[in-house]
Length: 230
Image 1 (cartoon, rainbow, N blue to C red):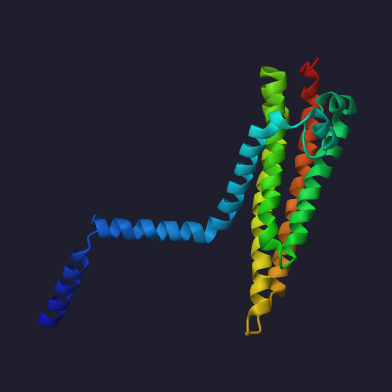
Image 2 (cartoon, rainbow, N blue to C red; image 1 turned 90 degrees about the vertical axis):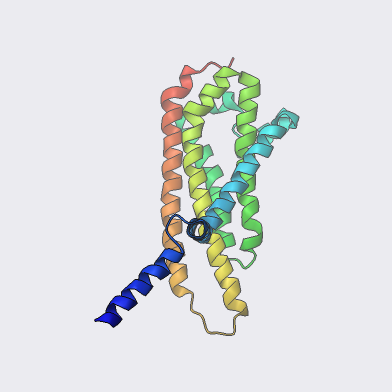
């Protein structure tokens, strides 16, 4: 009986060495939380950062891009508002889906490439650059009308596909990294199950991309006529 009591007291003393409110315990929990965050969300955070950097650079350089260049790259930059208004909702759907699908397809193919881990960040950056250029052009050219048009009509679809691109880039990066690791590994590693999961995710991302284009079409059809860009 004495032995049991003595062992119980020793356990209490060991726990008291590092109480819950001690600096060591707090730092340990903080380090664990940071490691858990970067392990689980680090890749997603990285591609989100690349997208944000692209938006920042695009918005800052939109003034220096000529109008002819913007019109020639209208598939990536939403700047030729007059022409898009004439095309109506169906034209908005085609423009939105074609543009987003190019980024989707590039991300998907780089995920199946050993060089995907190198080029995938540039896709997120360029998408962000296009978003930034479009926003900067509308804000500086049309003022308050351009701001309201961007927030009410363009931003919902842009935000939805941006989320798709970030998470799809993360999945593509992981599968490309796994392929590269398998190639140089001496062990016999099967990645068939990883490919199945990757294809399932990409199919889901494609459906969301299609829904994003439908959302753009709906917003253009219903609200675009309320704005005057003359």
